[in-house]
Image (tube, rainbow, N blue to C red):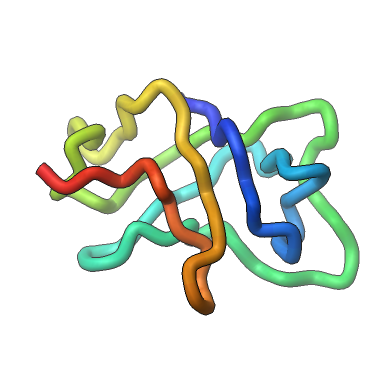
Length: 92
């Protein structure tokens, strides 16, 4: 599973010092490559010793997607508008 190399979404409950601390995230839906795991919470969560990984990707039209699994070496997540988006998404 590829790592979330950088997460620039500071307000995410799993973001600690620009690192994703969720054990695994899910990316996307049929039309938008957003981090489905993103949410805002008053306290930070996740495992502070872990680096988040992409557990599933629902963006079947992404160059890095093989069988709904991300094959990129790592991904970057950042805020674009009101969502946390996978900036590594590349259309086929």
